[in-house]
Image 1 (tube, rainbow, N blue to C red):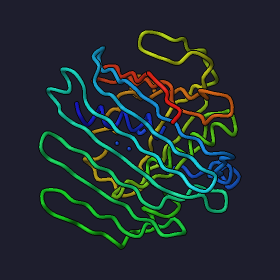
Image 2: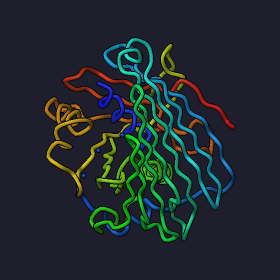
Image 3: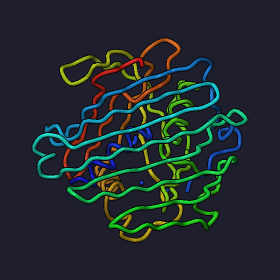
Image 4: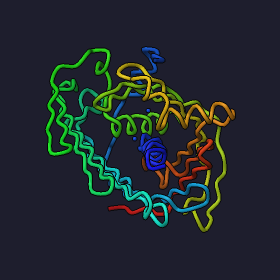
Length: 287
């Protein structure tokens, strides 16, 4: 259950996480999708509640500090309630980067997660041109450093949070939810593909703080390289297979919370054999 919730949340920020494949984008699309446009500093804190099978399962915060020349993003998540007691899991993901030739280029990405008393920390360091320099993983009192990567894994790929930023900015620039975005998580490369499904009016409720029109998108993760057979039979990939069997792909809603503000996730729904997962935006802070 904890893996399922984790992958669901990462989908939300990568617009999730949000912790997950090979459909190349056209040259014209790639140029548009990688454009980094921030005219003035913007700081946002977005709070989400995630429900699984009707029970509150996760509380999460997505923070964005965007500047014309640089950006910082973070996603924190922690299981809640009964599910939190049974599956005590929490995680923090952070990325710092800069704008280079109109594109967001990551500098450092850190992923820190804990399950009961076990903790894992992974750092990805990037060169000035955006290439992955090395990954450092601390787990079980051991440290592993990797510096040599197959180009199939890393070429033109970014970390998850930078990938989410690309998706959100492209949707804001085009007013559509579409495109393919390559991501490398330190071990595997996959594409996150969005398909536009028009717009929908969402109403404020006791669960959601958002009221207004939102872009409706369906989301798919496509394995490209580094995946083992077991990776395709568990976690997000297993959940995605369940949704495809039901012809109900994961759905994401994006909207601007204020005029000239960035596009942000306001809702997500996933229907699978594990039950229904729904994420609601519950609050916004302009920092």
